[in-house]
Length: 333
Image (tube, rainbow, N blue to C red; front, side):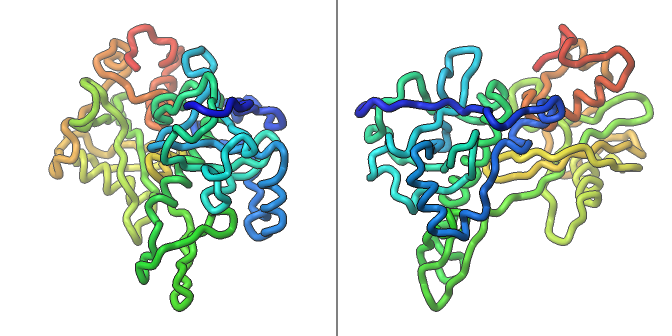
């Protein structure tokens, strides 16, 4: 990226003390910033935040996030001072207020070209899905939020009621129809999806794979929640549709924002009531029961460690006395 050299701040966690409990949170989750929602309703306050000397932006280009120190052991979210960006690349309507991050007003900004950006030494646009697990928890959360908002705005440039262009209001958190006779407002949406680790009374875990995944990778069962459906019902339905297994009991585990593009993964554990697998809908290429011994021996490749799927498998694996999935030499990640 050529042009004016600009000072750059990495995603700092000062003022966001991460307790041991937060350190155990899933990637993209946690109280990583103050969303400062009151500023969305306060035009003067929003203008003041934009003009604040420390105001910064996280940049998204072709769905990739700007990262600093990518080739080191400690990559960070690259936060660019608004004052460093040419005015043409950061019109106020293009900025989405995320909140205060490490005490600074922070915005998301989608850029359509990089040649107009200042020279940002030591940075590179990276696929967030691949690098998130290497980032500090707060940085990953911030970038996930930014990517979700940029994606939502990109997909809702026109009113779904009358087809007129939309314009951002309330700090970019609302898209309003420009047709005064319509006036429809659109708000950010997420797609709820259940994801579940099913085990049985024989100490096995039910895992499946999709044909598009890397060879030998297996993961937990997942699927979108349908309209008019409770989460527990979605768990039972998805497991039944994809594997033919009936569920006897379901327990909530945790949730994870998954901004690819806009999902919220709702994690569960479940105990199977049956054992015979039938893939009637053929959505999965394969589904099988696996023992801890098979996982430990590397019979399958596990999902990425930053995913809630891995956390579910890890919890099941570590439930056996003396077991630690991360410390198992033969496990494949």
